[in-house]
Length: 476
Image 1 (cartoon, rainbow, N blue to C red):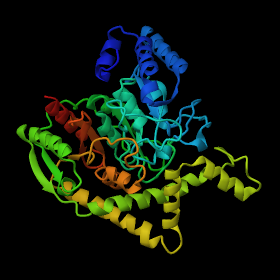
Image 2: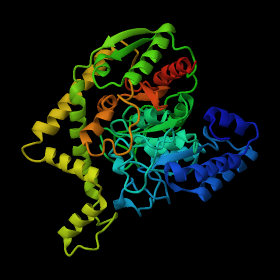
Image 3: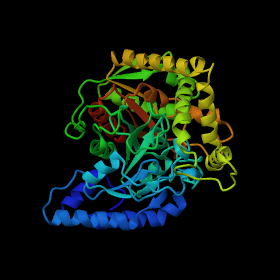
Image 4: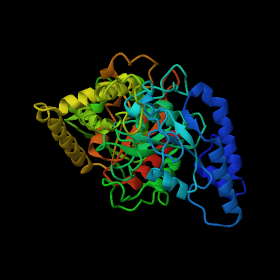
């Protein structure tokens, strides 16, 4: 009952299998595997089983059921769930219990999904390996010597280890697609504004977006369809209705023009990643796709621009964690100033401190125009690069990451090297366009390789259709 697709699980449930048995099977998998993997920070066994029994009762009574009725889902620990801790992987929130549900959690409940627990992450989503979690170590289930990626490493590891079929992550610069690539699962960042951010702990407010993680494209589409749509409580939420992602998912996409970003194919791209990407591209071409080479001349500025915009917004967003209203409060403080400084110094880890300091500096008087304002101008140019490309092609295809997963400790002493692991993913966040990573092979060590598909804003239905088409071709 574990390790199959969501589609097959829904078929089994419709055919007489119970939600309780399905959830029990996944909880057993968590008990047996998570000590080694470390994907979960909180497992709500009693709550999950109660949800499953309620769904079984509704099914037996012939009551209407939601689209994910009985399916277990894990949630990244920066998304609020009533009665469960929301730690953001940080000591400063280690004991914080959420008093309310995020909008995506409300919608999961409406879809009758079963929330089984909260997953580990880089502290406040600041990282690309989950090594920056202050609370737990998460390993890559494919090979425990390697990182799972980040910052949604716990969610991707949980899906890859068959502890849940679906999980929610969040993406600020690649935090869903990069770990999905490293763990060999499907991960997708929706259009900015497609999914409500209400109840998501903010990192970079103009970049953050919640998205799905699944074993296959179909599962990711079903999860996104359940949580997407306008929310009055999020002022950045788009007014578009949630799209129908399932009806045309497996239909022939017709003639396709596939854009390859030339700047992504140069120095720094691992040879085995390049070969796997080329194989996927060749199979699309053999199936009738036309390949168009696209130039993104501002690629070299993407990482600097991203780390100025994201850290500037983080310095403002994380100011609320001051030890006054909630979060860790130092016991060593003798006055108000010491309470602030000690509480934040003790509660935040080194990567979070680094990004707060960088963001505060670039917003300070005399530096705002030179740093943050110029980064926003670069962002506009990157948006224009996407618009130029999409005038010529239906979808952009690229490697998700320049390498496969790296070993623990390999990049923690070199923050810039860690940042560059997101070099192919940050531009989609800066431009607000939807992007999806799916597995396209493995390297000689058996580590997964992902390819990234990107389409214009609010074209998730087309993106999933093209991803499903690609998934079938690569799997053949």
